[in-house]
Image (tube, rainbow, N blue to C red; front, side, top):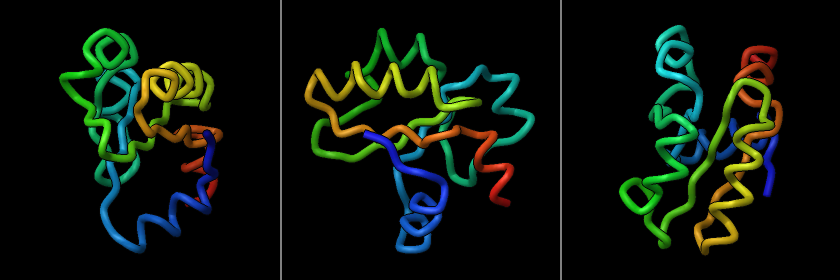
Length: 96
């Protein structure tokens, strides 16, 4: 399940979302999408039940959208509702 940056911005105007930046802590500290929480890919993959609730909707992104897409597919197969932000943080920067 993918959404693009324009759709994400439309959803953000309606209210807060569960945004998760799965990049490294160092990349996150250099900039992220407003209100995104940082949980690195491996941390989220191996401890998903600590961070996610099956009754919520989550939006994941990485730099380009590839790592977050793989993780989105895994989490969706386990019954979570997760969307990948196509193009990741780089697409967000281009849209700004």
